Length: 112
Length: 110
Image 1 (cartoon, rainbow over the protein chains, first blue to last red):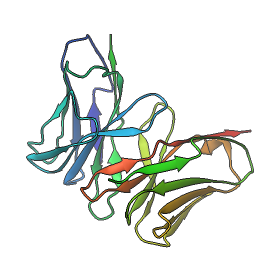
Image 2: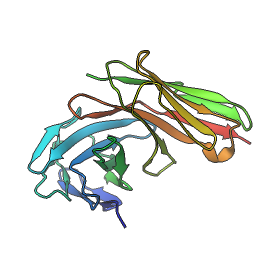
Image 3: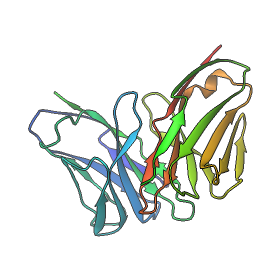
């Protein structure tokens, strides 16, 4: 089955800890994206990558880091520098033909 | 940079009524997307609009794109409770950023 797999679905973290959210796709898409969603809010772009070994900052990159060593994988690290990390994180890949995004199920991070 | 504005942000309507959600965007974008999000869930793609005048329909939902007016609409016909969700429009920026509107939370009353 083709799609986007995010893990974990739920994650609890203590203040001061880094956490890494996994995002894997088997759709053979070049571009991948990370968004953050706060309750009742829209999606804000954290980072995106158009090709392996390259990525660009989105609108709220501070306190986050990413890597893109493989086409299939685009992990997001939420560092201790992110002041308010509790949120719903969504990963997506983009179909080049139309630009349409395909989303994973999301990862819900709670900082205790 | 592309900015996307939706209105209304919240809509409560009776079953059987018609209504339209508007999506305005600030710069040239010849691609516009509509997504649906159910509470606590991820987003699913509804419509992809790739050119001026494009119209797509699926069931009681119809989306259209007017690139000259920089406007897309999502029209709901004879609403049913199952359509209660948050609807997002999004546009493709020149640098491949995909920018989302704040979403329209649609609540359909039985």
